[in-house]
Length: 238
Image (cartoon, rainbow, N blue to C red; front, side, top):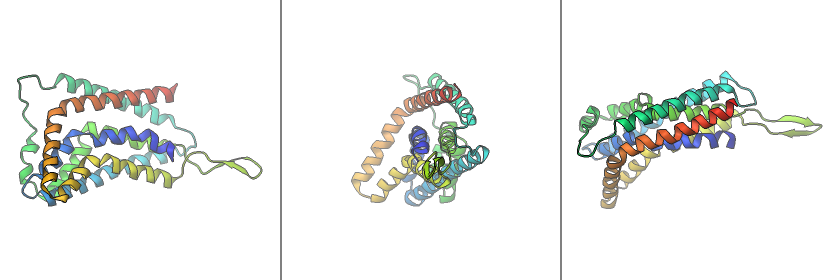
């Protein structure tokens, strides 16, 4: 199972560190209907991320069920890595300059008016329409799908050696990726549900820290993950 879990860990962490969903859930939790909307947002995030990961894992496994790592995953990582590096470069060019205030996205200004259903929908949109979340989700799921499959290959009379993992192992790896990638929304919700003054203070500190370091995270995470994808692609195609 390590063949599927190891390569996807960096992608899952990149999804969890995406600042926009973290900012969104922190603002939702601070709104008048924070508890209900926060639960709906987190549920929407979990379901949306699970749908993306499951779709890519299923498609990739069906595309090439071989016992060796397929080349399609290397070509995909090459494209995803290039896209992430371009996103990091654009984010660096558009970073806030000293003395200049950047207007927040329009959807952030309307968070106080969200219903539970719209909160869940916002979470799904932040997955499928936000490249810095969608690309790591696809890349991590592709790593799981590309893990060699099979239960064992005979090497002699009565002797077998295990190669790859089965469908169940990939399902476990996909579930783990969804949970790790959702920590950025799950942890604030859990802290909010604790409901004491210390919890509210902690959420306020997280909100301030995320707002302060948003540009740096949005540049560094795609840069590092893009380099990792390109390295994996070159290694797989060499």
